[in-house]
Image (cartoon, rainbow, N blue to C red; front, side, top):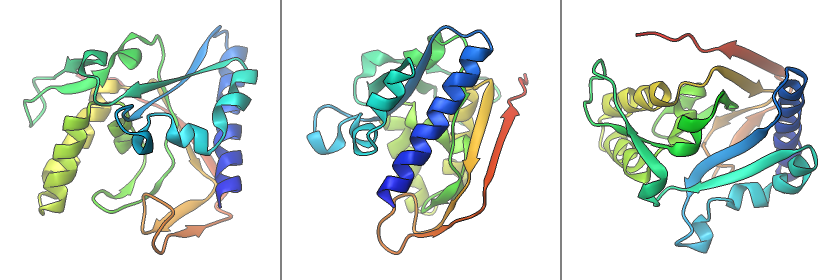
Length: 199
């Protein structure tokens, strides 16, 4: 499945970058803050390297930037008085400084979240403490906390557009492709939706 995943990620990122360029954008950045440089096995760019994405998208003029989830100086606190959990979400400064954020979620099974798409995407752009606490609470049976926190993460980042790649679906044992994972192929769905701003 590795070659197929590699091709899908490359195609999706390149297609979005080309559309942005046609719309007048002069710069596109592929960004994720999922790991840490403290451990080689958790390096922020490990997924990008494993899928060999960086070189191909760079040829299309896309900058690749990986944030370190344990570098607290890279994150800024974001909060909202309407949130049911008052604690701020630590969002990477790259997203807060971007003129436009386009989320590229892939719907899949996920142990704690059951099934994920656009809301949980931004667990990959917030500080480790937020992610760890939400997952810990979910594993302890407090799924309501997990669900609320992923809504807060999505609200803190607020992409202007989500492009959902559902050409195939990971339907069992996600979010990784290990331990009995099952992929339903042939779904062949791509969809994009603007995110509505609310107060």
